[in-house]
Length: 289
Image (cartoon, rainbow, N blue to C red; front, side, top):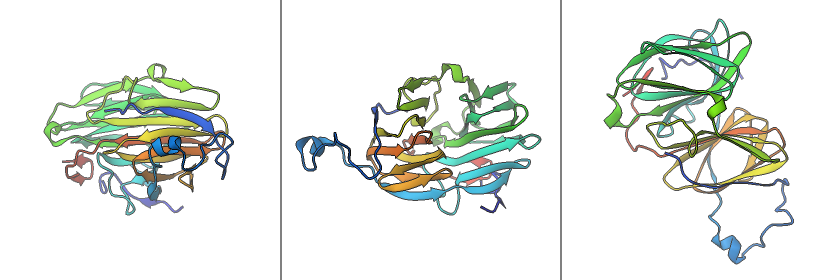
């Protein structure tokens, strides 16, 4: 994929659904499957369907930082309440030197390595793999995000729009260490709750955000509630969703219903679901008014 310059300056709570692990057999319902047309099957929610496929776009942002931009791109402008999603992989001296923001929460989740956050509120914070940084720019603030050491540092940065009534609130910062993030682990699945039930992280928008790793050839099952905008983005490997194969750097937008994500051991993906504000997203570079 050819890189092209797309800069943020230029282009730019949880639902109580159950999580289930089930055996994954490609192309097969499995021995324990419920017969078609049975009462049990009719009582289950309808299957979540793929509404749109998206592929991240290679870009250079900040000071030479490499990102895969999931959105905004020509494929998908925004996904209310989400303004931007970047899958970044940054090696020093590249990074994101001091810059301004306004009107949204910049939320970073570290996959590998560490990121060093500084801002004009006086915060100076280093977050490592599995931790998060929440920078609520509110009525306006400045910050920098730079690699926290040698090597390549990978993470996901999500911009979450603030509702109009909160656009002029005071800025905030919160760093959360991986050690206090809830992790559910079985022989089949590892689910890290980044935002949602049990997580110490609280956004000003109702969001569910999970990091799911398949530890065996298996399935992740969850019900997507109505009135949510929902995305699955593949971090590693490939998964099967509603009969479609989705690989690293690709994502799918989903309808409400019973979601099943199948794959081989080692596949990893982010599940992201948010309640829209149903307000215009006025995105002007580093500002969302």
